[in-house]
Length: 188
Image (cartoon, rainbow, N blue to C red):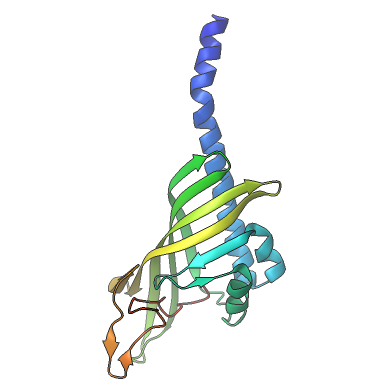
């Protein structure tokens, strides 16, 4: 009987460990979201690995310091709503690969002078590493962003999409003829 219980425990333990890791990483996303909303580098930086890099849809990269400096330029929007959902978590030792979706929205005046609900649905591939201070975000790579107005998708941008041409030429800050990030909606 004791041998059977030990065998069952060995089969269940990896599932429990995975659930604990997923919960820990979900908690870290919540902490990171709150820290980024605060715009305080002292709250953001401890959640990022020393070699953190963010890669946008145009394959442009930024370090933790560049991310924090960029956030400081965007005013906080107390009316903005944001929710992060982990679509998948794959753990290999002290590294976790996460596909996460962030849905965000706020209400503001559109070009037509009417108030609309604008939103984004962004998908990214993130890498977390576990160290002495818990899970730290090492890398986030944008995969796609859909922009909505009043619940209707008005534009979807995927990593590697060509840069659209406007009346004044190439639009967006992407390099090499690929799409850069969309203009921020709200405070992210």
